[in-house]
Amino acid sequence: MGYDSFGLPAENAAIDEGVNPEEWTNLNIDIVRNQLKRIGLSYDWTREIHSHDPNYFKWDQWFFLKMFEKDLAYREDSYINWCPQCATVLANEQVQGGHCWRCNSEVEQKFLTQWFLKIRSYAEELLNGLNNVDWPEKVKVMQRNWIGRSEGSIIKFPIVGEERTIDIFTTRADTLYGVTFMVFAPEHPWVREWVKGTEYEKDFEIFYTDVMKQNKFERTDVEVDKKGMFIGKYAINPMTKEKVPIYIGNFIIYEYGAGA
Image (tube, rainbow, N blue to C red; front, side):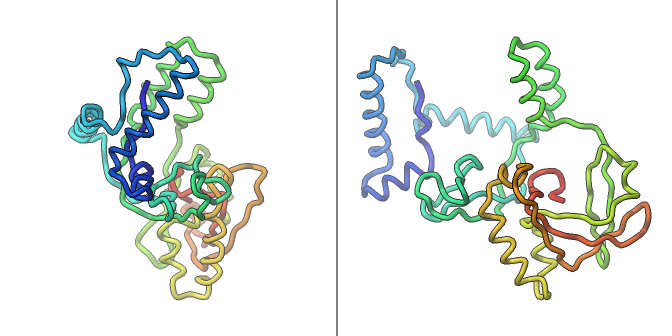
């Protein structure tokens, strides 16, 4: 039996109660343990673990350092779901209708430097491993979709008036002649840079605030209305050399692909 007891939610709760975080956490674990025993659950209580125990989290730190040494841990800027009331990061599943599942505060999007693990380096190995496990086929399909491996090409679209390019992955390079516009995620950092001080800035802020209230699963749901707006920027189709307008859309996710 284990308790995921280490983190800001536990610390914030202790602050609210005016007690030491370790004492408050241990007290709540005692309460949960007694409840589990009273309903007759037969765990081996000699094998109980707590994620706030130094004897436990030292191994988390050890694993991270090993990954860092192997260049499998890296830092990158990305958006997170932030609850200002709980003062902590939320997983997508913990954002319900744009609000925190715990305190119902409106969730904000923050662009922060974070640590990531290079799990994509193991995509092929993970896919091949699915052939060796005795799992239901529907579970294997879910895993293959989650890994998301695909083969294609990176196409570079020059941005009008800039040296940067928009690098897009596609499995259908033959369709490039038909590209007539591009769509960015509203939270892509380039977008705010492009609209700043322009006639599009005010409408962008309204659109951005509205989209950020949706979680990422809602935004990509086929049943959700697709919304977008032009932001006054253009790219060049590398095949036709024609200018194509750049829009932002609520159905594009920054963390997926190039965020465009």
